[in-house]
Amino acid sequence: MTYIIAEPCVDVKDTACVDVCPVDCIYQEEDKDRTLYIHPEECIDCAACEPVCPVAAIFAEADVPAQWKPWTEVNYLYFKDKEGARARVNQLRPVGTPPVQPVH
Image 1 (spheres, rainbow, N blue to C red):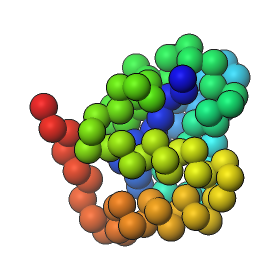
Image 2 (cartoon, helix red, strand yellow):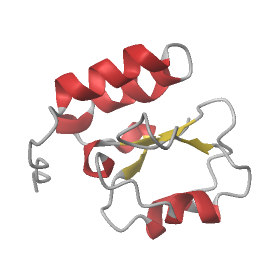
Image 3 (cartoon, rainbow, N blue to C red):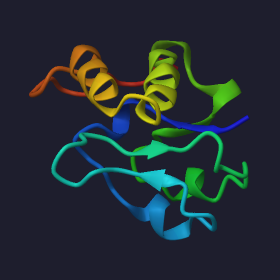
Image 4 (spheres, rainbow, N blue to C red):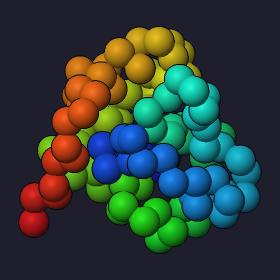
């Protein structure tokens, strides 16, 4: 299992999660990425990142809400095809589109 960063992070990119990650497995390219990504093979499932996220965008993979399941694929894709992941982010959340609120 790994942790997934979902839609609420898009265009926010608060790096509190990066600061607490003991294995430095959270990535972004500053001028290219609209969100952060957790490397699925480097993540040790410690959950340190989850509580510090100010927009509640980080979930254990098994707990990603249904509305944000596509972000699991995006997270994995980033580490195989960064440009493909960036294109998918833009499809899921076009630039200028307000964030989708979680379904309760």
